[in-house]
Image (cartoon, rainbow, N blue to C red):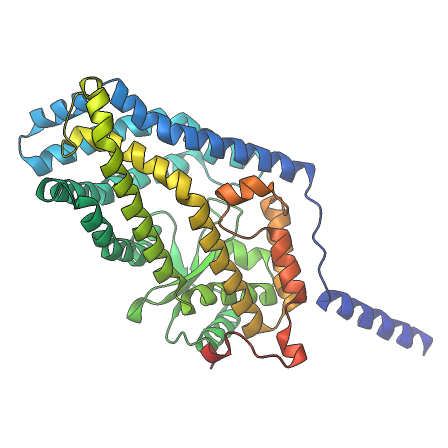
Length: 409
C-alpha cells in the first residue's frame, strides 16, 4: 500500500512539473559561439550589400555591362534582360564564397545542417534563376515608369508593388518552395486530424495539410499556413514532427494559424509596399545629386539608363537599413499576437513554453540577445520573453475575456 501511495505521489509531482512554469535554460558555449558567428556574418552581409553595388558604380562596371547588353540587342526589354543576367552572374560569383561559408560551412560546423554540397549549390542556382525571373519583371516595370513619369515613378512603383508582392507571397509556397524540397501528404494521420480540427476551430476550413522533407537540408524546424480559397494549406517540416511532441506541434500550428487568421500576411504586404515606396522616394531624391557629382565615373547621367540599376540598389539598400528596425518591430508585434492567439485556442501554456525551449536548445539560440542587435536585426521577440509570456498568460483561469475569442468556432 505504501508503494502504491508513493507511486501516486510521484506521478502527481511529475504531472505538476510537466504542466507548470518552464525555466529558460542558459545558452551553452556552443550556442553563444553560434550567436557571435551569425552576428558577425550579418554585419558583413550588411556591409557587402552596400559595397557591391558601389563597386559596380564607381568602377564603371555597370556602364560596361550596359554596353555589352546593348550589343546583344538594341530592343529595350532584351537589353534589360541581358544586363540583369550579366550583372546577376557577376554578383553571384563574387558573393559565392561568403554565401558558402555562411550558409554551408557554418551550419555544418555547428551541426545544424544535413545538406550535401551538391544540393546546396543546386538550390543556390535555382534561387538565382528565380531571383532573375522576378527581378526582370520588377526592374522592367520600374524603368518603364521612370521613362513615362520621371517625377512620380517612385509613387507608382510603390503602388504597383502591392499586387505584385501579394502574387509573389501567394505563389511562392505553391510553385517556388517545391523547387527546393518535396511536399507530400502528412504521414501521421491521427495528428493530421487534430491539426484539421484546430484549423476549423480557428475558422480555417478545407485547408490541406502537407509534410515537407526539410531534413534533407536542415535540422531546424519550420511550419506555416498560407493560401486563399482553394489554395489554403498547412505545411509542417518533417523536422518539426520529429522534434516536438503532439501538444507542442499543436501550439506551433496554432501560432501559424494566428498569423493567417489575424491577416498578418496582408499587413506585411502593405508594410513592405510602403517600405519599397519610401526607398524609391529616397532614390528619387538622392540619385540625381549623385549622378551630377559622380556621373563621369558612373558612365551614365540619367536615372532611366539601365546602368543606374546599382545606384538604385545602393540608395534603396541604405534606406532599408535605416528603416528596418521599425519594420522588425512591427513583425515582432505580429509574432506576439500569434503567440497570444495560439495560447488562447490551445490553452496549453506548458506545451507552448516547452516548445520554445526545445527550439532554443536544438537551434542554438541565445534566449537573451544583445538589446541593440535585437532591435537592429531580429523580427521575433527573444526566446526568454516568449517563454515568460507562455508561462504567465492565462486569462481563462481568471474568467477574463479572451482577446481573440471572436475568431474561434
